[in-house]
Image (cartoon, rainbow, N blue to C red; front, side, top):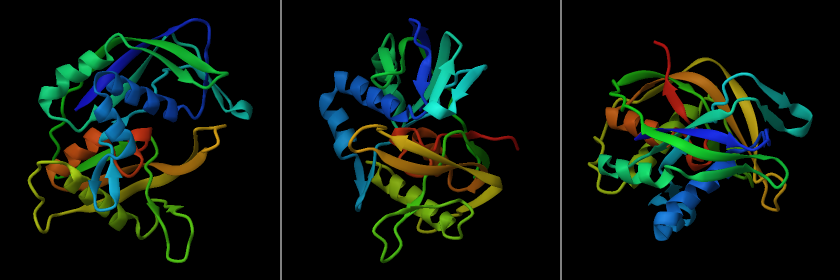
Length: 260
């Protein structure tokens, strides 16, 4: 299920680090932890498992600042001019959890940023968005970068792959299947089912820094692109509820239905 959160900016601070995704992710964990610390710790430290894979089953969109905003590239900062911004948030949960989620996030106060730059925000509204009824083949647009990685034999590090890579579709298929199989109490997928991924246009590479300036800082590369996906409806719904690709709990892989 998906939600839209409206946030009002308090105070005069209007500069936000370009790499703000980690701060939103940490806030979501904190909000969940305020109601259910055990579940928040489970999401953060373990997640749902399928083999050696872990999944957190939540995702969030980039902040919608509207226009205009100014980018200070030399300082990796965004200058925000509006008093109100929005964020979309999704969870792979049953409908019965809607009131629980709305109650958790309503009236929350949040600071997004580092020790030097950030925004003081108040949640003024949260609403559930209508569920999409997906067809087997749908067109999507990635609004936040999609991350797919692969560690080649003999390499010490995983490589972040472009959707133009010939191995991409197979790795994406495995990611979908592993996620679905990690969901508790779900009916198994058919032994064989239609699945295809088709890139539309030219992807744009984006490099993000997570925990910038901290000892455990890391860099993640993802890609923005449009694509066609053929898959069972339950996999479309799962993608819309918890993101496509990897590192969804850090805000990567938020997709919305594109123009047909």
